[in-house]
Image (cartoon, rainbow, N blue to C red; front, side, top):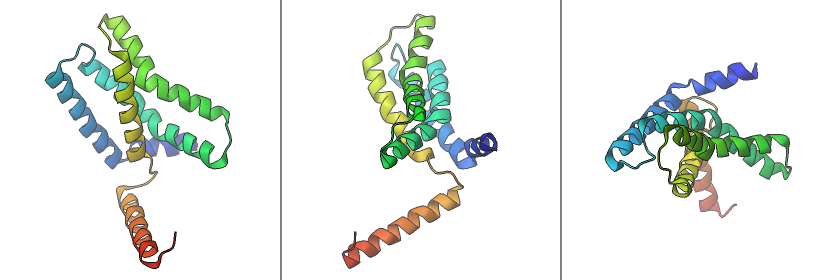
Length: 149
């Protein structure tokens, strides 16, 4: 049951569209900047693992923070994050024999990983996401006007 829900969430058109836009930007960057460790192959590999793991990883970290409880899934999320931003990068470029700029890539990829996680965190349609955003905006405006927190 959970696998079916996870797959349906991964196949949402708005998430796939944002993935394709991001992939387009990464591929454009690989041609534009021509860095030794930025090619089309690594764009696909890292984007694939980010798409699969980033929302779950962020949700796991947020739950651990909220409940102040370190659980086994947190270790899995740490591994998923590391694998997506550095592990697959290192293996790919080691096998390809490319020069690596690991530290800088790690920092940039971590930022992109969690930005994508925030974008893809919502489990629902784009209409539902828009309703949540509007409700939050209305609530924040109301609290600002009434002085509530």
